[in-house]
Structure formats: C-alpha cells, structure tokens
Image (cartoon, rainbow, N blue to C red; front, side):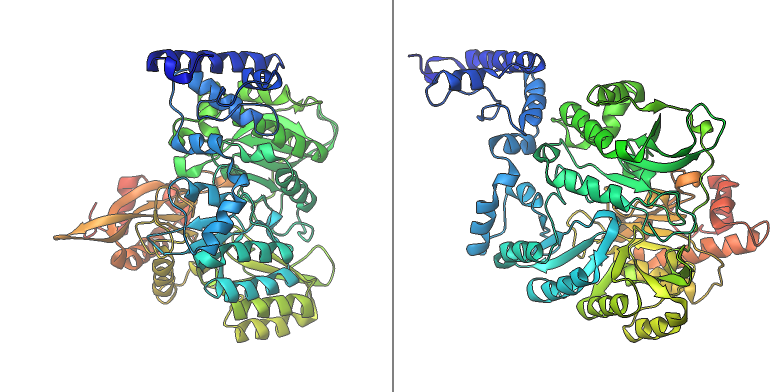
Length: 605
C-alpha cells in the first residue's frame, strides 16, 4: 500500500486538485464523490477528497462542499472560515460550546465564527463578554416572550435588550459560563438564536404593521413565518459563503426596507386589462447591500404568495453554489450578480423550481402607495374599526428589563398581546381600543417611554457602536442621543428627518440611506486621535431610493450635534416652501452648494 508520505508535496497538490475536479464533475452528473465511492468499497482510514481533510460526501452539506471543491480545483485558496467549516460544521459544535461554558472560556480563532451560528458573538475587546442575537420572524414578539426575555436579560445578561435594525432583539454582557444556559433557556421560552450570525440567513423581516395596516395589499406575516421555519429546518441554508438577508413588504405605511436586502419581495397590484391576470403579486429584487452602495435590483418577475418561499430557497441555493469562498469581502450576492448579471442568476434560480415565474415589466404594476416616515411613532388607526396601534419611542433601541415587562403588560391589558419590532429600532403595540389610548399614553410615560418625539429623535437609528462592537470607531448610541437632544431643543421641524449613525463600513445602521448619515472614523486632532464621523446627506429608500452623498469628512464627534443643527437650520432658512422635505432640499442642490449653504467652513472638509 502506498502511504501519503511516499508522495512529494507537488504530487500531493496535483492529486488533490485532480480529485477535487473529479468530484465536481461527478456531482454535476448526480454521481457520488470519489471519497464516498471509496468509502463504500471499504477504503482505509485517511483517504479523503476535500481540501481541508473532510470527505465531500452527500447530505445537506454537499452543496457547500461542491462549492469549496470548485474553488480548490481552480487553484484558489479557501478563506480560513471556509476551511474551518469544511473541517467541522459549526452547527455540530454544541459540545464545544458547552465545554467552553463549563470551563468559563470564551472562543478563540475560528471558534468565534462557529459560535455565531448558535447566536453567540464574542465582542472583545469592546466588551469581554458575549452578545446573543435572537430570531423573530417579521419582528413579531408575543408578550409572554418579551416577559421571559426580560427575565433572561436580568439572569444572564446586562439587564436590557437592544432592538436591532433588522427588527430583532440582542442581549449583551453575557458571561462565558452562562452561554449554554442562556441558549437552552431561550428555547425553553419558545425563542431561537440559531443562525443569527455568520454564514447563513438572518431573521426574516417584514412590514411591521402587517395584518393591521389600512393600506397594505397583503398580510406578509404567514410568508415571514414560512420562510423562518424553512431556514430552521433545512441545514443547507447554513452552508452559505457569507450572510444573507430576506424581507417581505406588503405595501403598508411602514417600509420593510426590502430593497436593502439580498432578496426583497414587494407586494404589487396588477389591475384588470394587463397581460397578467389581475391580483396581488410579489415583485422580486436581488442583491441589496447599501453598505456597499448598492440597492436590490428588480428581477422582472411576478410571483404568487405561494411561490415566494420556494423561489427564495432556490435563489439561496444558487448563491450557496456560486458565491465566493476565497474573499470574504466579495462573498455576497451582489458580487455574483455583478459577475453574472440578473438574467443568468434568474435562469439558474428558475432551473431549480417546479414552476416558471411570470415575466412582467414594472410598468404592468400599479404604483406602490407611499410610505409614511413617521408612522412608526405615535398612535395610528388600524384597518380594524375602533382599533389603533402605538409606536413607542425607544432611546436608540434600548429597553431595560422593567420596561420590557411593562410593555408586555400594556400589550396584554390594552392590546392584542403582540408587540411588533421595526427596522427603525422601536416597537409597536397593536389592537388598542381607541377609548383606551389615553390610558396607554399614561402607562408608557410611567415606564419612562414616549409615544411622540421630535423630528430627529423619531427618525434616529444607531448601531451598537464601540461600546459593544469591536469594529466600530465611535460610540454611536451615545452620540445619536446627543444629536437628538441638541437639535430638538433648538429647531422646530415638521415631519421626520432620518438620522443614521453607524460605527464602521459594515453599515449596520445603513448610513447611506439616511437623510443624514454618519459613518464612524478616527479623526486626527492635534497630536491625538478622537472619535468622529464622515457625514452624508440625501440618502433614501423605496420610491426615494438613492445612496447618500458625502458632504464632509472627519468631523469630531463632539461637533456632530452642531453640524447637524447647521445643516437643518440652513434647510429651514433656504427651502422653497414649508412642504419641501430635507431630502428634496438636498437633492436639488449640488454638494458644493450644500456645503456653502450649511456654512461649515470651520469643519474640516
């Protein structure tokens, strides 16, 4: 028998590449891999075909292995994360996670990535602790879950929870020894954290007013739920080259920001007399990733509601097979689309489906009714007669445990027992009788929460920042509150101005789509470096879709409130009429004109 040591390094490399290529060819013809065939014939230990020492057999991980083999056969080195996943799938590391907890140890190396698959993020050096991200489909949270979450936040975390920009919850300040106990306690309470980090599909977002919105075309809650459980029950959905986002928008007054997702489904109406039978359908958009300055692109197809989840699953599988496994910065759907184009990606997706989507131009669909920027704050009528919902203002998305219990009690006493998280980092309570609105106002204020806010505070979005994220260059939540306090005390603005603060280029707070966006950076001041921001204006989403323009670079964080005030004061002074929004004002001026109008000569340009 020939031993591995009998081969030279060059021979080993050649044979490894040959076997990987052969595996790919066999898999495309539905044949088992070389390793699987050898194993069936009783191969001795140590014979394998994969690039990282694991056999590339069948099963739910076969797609991931085929993709890895393809890059390996081309002579390209897999990213370290891909090599680690090939060696041992992160979902198989529960025992490792428990052992770390039992010994009070945090993960190191690629185990940091693996534990994210279970919802645990080791966030050192920002905090020497875990963050745990949960998974709520469509942002829907039952009051009983919120009450349980408050208890777990006090028992295992920092006593609070943060609402994220994906209408989700995160717990922070979790110690190493409590990690496994928290995850099992969450499951006992009917909550889930599986796949909320790393290379899989994030929680499914949807219209937060689904089922209660007077203008919606369709209630997307069943679709969010079906997609949620499809992901949880199909392991191949956890073999992606990077993260993936999916959103469903039902045409309501509050946007789901579906055009910022890898796959966005937008409800549309087709009227009588068109080539397609009249009714409500979903248009599909691919490749949104605003942190890379790109919105999702219309695919030119219409789907019935029943076709959406199978279509999404097929598209994810195409991405799984063809997304980049060597460069993490390019391992997103956008870059597959850049290389292939929409038409090829759509063709590959449709080849996996038992049906063919209807091709239809956007012009065949009735225009979407406009979103209402302030509809996530305050009291608003529901489609159910005599009922209203209230949008509760949260200070940059944070809720203390006592406030969580209080909101759960309000939802049960006055509402329908359901709370709805939004991508604007706040919460809605639905099903309130009109005559009980005043009582709800009093109880919210007793909790230290508000149901109304100024123009800046009502549209304020901030990522975790460097208080809890190792990537962030600035304390975004603290600075966001300083901006809101400063501006709301000095200017009277109508409507809502969306101000987004993100701590790093990952753009979790989507600074490019804010009316005003702040991107965290280090700013040199004398001999020191201080926290600061690059400043953008004119971003938008939906029918106002546009990437914001950089207006100033390297503004110290201490000057951010004054900078924001000057920009908004110039808008109030120079706008055409009271109906002109800040967004429209910015878009009718060049960058140079805006700089002059904002009178920011003292700020480093």
